[in-house]
Each structure stands twice: as structure tokens, then as C-alpha cells.
Image (cartoon, rainbow, N blue to C red; front, side, top):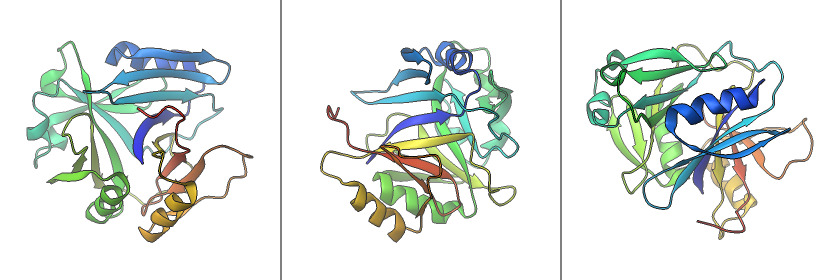
Length: 228
């Protein structure tokens, strides 16, 4: 399976989506009653979609997922011990915090360098995501994983300030199955790695919702008819 989407619970999907679209110079895919989607092209034929489904009163009390932006030029240095000192907090159109490199603040052409996820045990969760995505651990202070090509945003895992609350994260990842994978295979893999599936009181959906070892939600989508 591969990382396909970053999903933002959005009260005003168009406004929220256009904020990120303008910031990252992505391309609008969908703008309808269900929400807003914009596509961020990655090196090669890869992409990452930013999705903004309509969600009333999303819970933002405990943010655990942060986008990290910069020019990409100083990413390796920021994955060292000074990681947090090199970043400053900003707010998007919905009030979610994101992190921006202080030295890149005035630069144009910002890129999504990483997605930061709060974990109970970053080293432990790094193994979960490594096995699930087939990515490589490229730094350990903080823990960071990268696509085998080395291109595209990293997944950065940091120690949580407090345990995950029962409320759903207002930002989460979606993973997409490869053509040769089944949902039952994915379920078995996730359980074997220490994750779990959540009950779905919101009705029948084509995807399934899981939590990693630290309780962070992510969705697994069925294989696409036209795989990239």
C-alpha cells in the first residue's frame, strides 16, 4: 500500500483547500458538496492529494498531525537534533497549526517537506510505518521515514505531549492498496504490526478506518482501477 492522501476535517472545504492550494501550488481536482481536493505532484509519477471533506465542528483541541513546509534545501539539517528549534508555528485557514522553517519564511516556492505525527513511542511506531509502507528510516532524532526513492515528503515521528484522546484527529493519512493487495490482507498486516481497526458507526464506506500503535487514525482505501 502507499500513502495517497492527507485528509483535513473541514467546516469550509473550499476556503481551507484553496489556502493550501495557493501555498503549495497544487492543482484543484474536486470542488463539490462533498468537499474539496487538490493534487500535489511529487517527483516522478507520484502524487499526494490534500482532501477537505465537509465535517461539522471538527475537534482541534489536541492536534497531533502537523505539516512541515520549507524549500527542501535544509531538510537534512532539520532532521537532526535541532529539528524543533528550526521551525516556527503558523495557522492555516481553519486554525490548524503547521510548521515552517524560519530560514525559509520569506522564500517563494515552498514545498511539503514532511508530515509530523505525535507518537507514544516514536521508535516503536517507526517500525509500524516502515513495515506498512515499505519506507526507510532515514533519521532517528527525530525519527523520520522516507519513500525508497528518497523523494517527496518524509514522515516524522515525535514524542507526544500527552496520550491520544478519544476524539478523532482532525488531520489524518489515507493509504491506498496496490492492485495485488486485498483489504483482508491489509487488516491482517495492520493487526500483526500492533494497529487495530475501528468500528464504523458512520455507515457503510468503501474504505476502512484503523489506528496505529499510538491511536492515530488512518484510512485504507481499496486499490484504484487505474494504478499509477
